Length: 219
Image 1 (cartoon, rainbow, N blue to C red):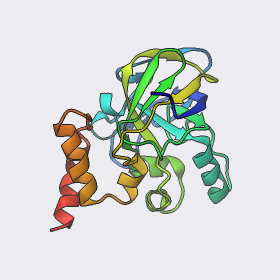
Image 2: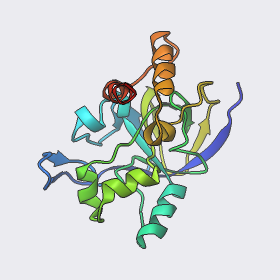
Image 3: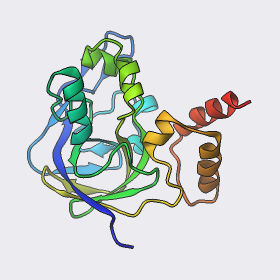
């Protein structure tokens, strides 16, 4: 099948320094900043990066977080401040491709060898709110629905700013990470679970609690 879209890596980011949170969640690695040159991306993400909370925001199913420049520009206008690459804790700042609009299970080829698979939306938390220092940040970020996308690494590779991103055709179910974050339905749950059970889609374990909550709310 032919690719459907192509974009660019504007910046590759990894942790600049670890910091203790003031919210009781221990140490955070959310302070990510652009790095020069070529860097390996492996099973657990960008080489030299750190995941401070693998239970909620990490592990191989959330190894790489991508956020688009278009969404960053939206927040820059909303907040009246610059949103430089890495401010949201993203590893990849992208241009020309959807991040929130990525379909669950869709694959990106980045640079010459890296192959990523979209797994889940970013869910805002108290640590993110602390970093931003904006009133009601979790609520505002949630309501805007511009959440970006987490990926698992299917094939490791070296990446640098300026590398191309080729987006492969989307899975037929069509459920984007943004749709699942902002407006999930019971039908979405049944569709994704059926595909997972059939081996046609590999869901992150993070979905279990969301599936239970969605199904419970429909009772």
